[in-house]
Length: 259
Image (cartoon, rainbow, N blue to C red):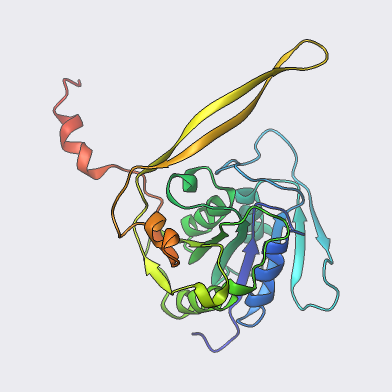
């Protein structure tokens, strides 16, 4: 770790006042100098959306007057928050970006929809070691105390060792008491998906509207996956790459009759 205190960027997708990010800020304050740039309202499921056809606003705020961090509330998406932090707000590139702690799962296929992970990926594309943290509890009253020591341990290791080039970490915690958490497993992403349905209804003006519903289906029986780890009481850590090239498919596509 560097001689000076690390600069740590904290963001999320549940909004700057969400309990998960307040826990994350508290833990990061024990490791370095913290700057928070987070959405002013919930942005769950936004993926890697960025604001291109509207204005962005950023306001310096005080959420906890007794805490040392500097905080900014942003009108944009999680990815917007990271872009603004790195390019406009911070005087130097952060040594680490942490996103979360998300209220709900970002394991398996959920990673592609996640605003939490997209913020981490955005930082990763700019060469910043980055981690997205999520707890499998959607409640605003979720208890984050059992995962504090794991958040600190993983963040410390990322600060000391860096992360592989082109990789960010997707960390998920099962909803368990601390004494029932068995430890950390480095995993692959499970082959799972959502079977989706739309609940169609009619509003008082006679216009159809829809609620998205669905069932999560895990078709992967491997014991090296994030879903297995979480189901068996472990913290899952999945290294995620943001180079989406399917290298194994290049030979196949080159066999097509393409001119």
